[in-house]
Image (cartoon, rainbow, N blue to C red):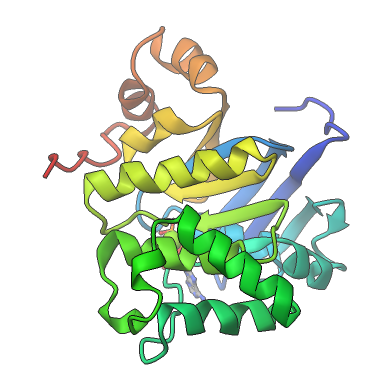
Length: 256
Ligand SMILES: Nc1ncnc2c1ncn2[C@@H]1O[C@H](COP(=O)(O)OP(=O)(O)O)[C@@H](O)[C@H]1O
Ligand SMILES: [Mg+2]
């Protein structure tokens, strides 16, 4: 926990805290995400995952503590962080009456991409995410896993070196979740750092690093192997969570 912050950390926080009145939603979180890692933040609903991500992006001001994201101070340089990072919020907004293509065009313009390069990028992302056949469909008619993939494509139009995904797979069937993780790996292979929150325990296995968050506190973090060794005597990640929290995180949904 007290190791010095690595020079190549994409995210490094110290004592990050958010209080709403008397209630502490994020409590003294010291966290490091190395460049290029896929880091999972696991915790039940209300644990503070979204609040933590929103502080990293400067969308919420910390009550205490601070840190750096992509080399920028999150207290004073949050605009630069928001410009560089990709963010898929828990309730991502797509424009249902615009087509898939138009949604991507809209977000590309928001990121300041020029028309020609944006067209190329959209074609590339539609093919990559398996949405090519839906490009002229209104986003409102795109359901389930495909909708998530569209939101994901919107978040990475500007090739962000860091991507923050807040429960990107919640409410999606297991097959679509698996496909979504393939996209995350594909992005990670190109060097992108990914911080992803989830309350699905099976997804923990897909991460290079994990942080377990309970009632605002980061109660454990490390590689899956480290967590298994330290907190479960080499047992499963489910066991790690039960040992830390006293109960399972969430039952994995049955395959469909
Ligand atoms: N703006 C707010 N005002 C008061 N309480 C909040 C606010 N935002 C979040 N909370 C509370 O903080 C806790 C953590 O919320 P959140 O970060 O959304 O958790 P998670 O994303 O892990 O489900 C919850 O108890 C939530 O009700
Ligand atoms: Mg949340």
